[in-house]
Amino acid sequence: MKPKRPPLPATASAAAVALLLSLTACGGDASAGGDGSTVTVTVGYQSRTINTVTAGTLLRSLGHFERQLNALGDGVTYKVDWQDYATGAPITAQMTAGKIDIGSMGDFPLLINAARGKQLGKPTRLVSVTGYNLRGGLNTVVTAPGSPLTSLKDLKGRKVSTSVGSAADGTLVRALQRAGLDPDEDIEKLNQQPAVGASALSSGSADALSQFVAWPGLLAHQGKAKALYDGARLGLPTFHGVAAREDFAKERPAVLEAFLRAQAQATDYLDAHPVAAAEKVAEATGLPAEAVYLYNGAQGIATFDPAIRPSLVAALEKDVAILKDARLTGDVDVDAFVDDRYVKKALGPAAYARHLAAGPPEPAGEVWPKGAAKTLPFTSARSLLKYVAAHRDQVRAAYVPDATTGTLWFADRSVWVADGDELLPFVTPENARDHIAGHGGARVVPYAEALERAS
Image (cartoon, rainbow, N blue to C red):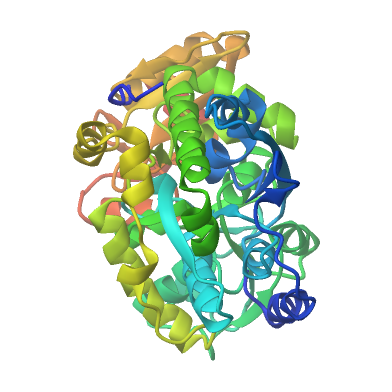
């Protein structure tokens, strides 16, 4: 189970840049404002990028931010304008145009946000984190179910869809480099929105898709894709976070702190009621709850915590080089961009320190029985398989952590290896092959055989 949180008080493309410039050229600052007694706070979020739900989809459904604003007692009537986007680029464009006050996005888009804000004289600050994975497991490269591709090296000469400037693009670039491939020369990169890329993969116009949460898990759950590369192989943290306009934060610090307190409340709710949270997000987004839970569940790929960890800041600093090579940004002053003063004040110094000391749970499997409000945890893959084999018609979803990287994946979509008496799950064929190479006699077995061996 995830460790309990400490108690708290009460795709940057040319088109995106063009949008950014056009919005800025319009002039007009739409910062939080009103008629003196009514203030509208505009929040940009990505409903289907479910690693941001504690600052977006879930937070909105719970109503915590509105209640925190009403509790300020400053004589002001607050309205919240929630604006939903598919990626981080338009949120950045609207923030630098003064039309969004607070926005959530992934680590690479956050850096673009910082760069654009400085360039256009509308600086922004990273004020909290939503969900993170210390190994990079939030980004995955997938292929079509019947694809003959089994490793990144097989992508040479192939078409790969991704969203340029996203964290998933960064994972693709780094992974290809580690595989000895040139990301600019050895593949044909298709710069596409996630939904367009998913369609391209299904139609065969793309050989692979590199995307962020929740697209890889969603497509795998639907039987429309299989995992080719587990981003956790990189061993580099990836996360999503919350940015705020600097002028907004200075003008209305109490409002920003109210947002961060509400985010912390949403995080507590997700930790205490992971199944209910997944159902709420599923209802709001149209995503299958089983795919939401893969990332946001008790043992999910993402760990949610608003604290800005030093390891995540260090990861941002390493990400700058990737964006500079892609000519998406110049230098970014990460230290100037990161500002944890507001979240520290919102949570309280002692609670904030406890958050920093906490971490992700130890990898474990889970079974979600049909109709259940809670999942069943399993410490071994064999015991989970044994349960599933005995309750086949009663299982809504089963999840297992990769035996090497710890990345959670659907049990029936995993690559299973029989190694003596052990049954070991892996996200990708490559992860499985690496294990087999060091264990004589180990071999890949079908999921049905793994169930039979465990029963």
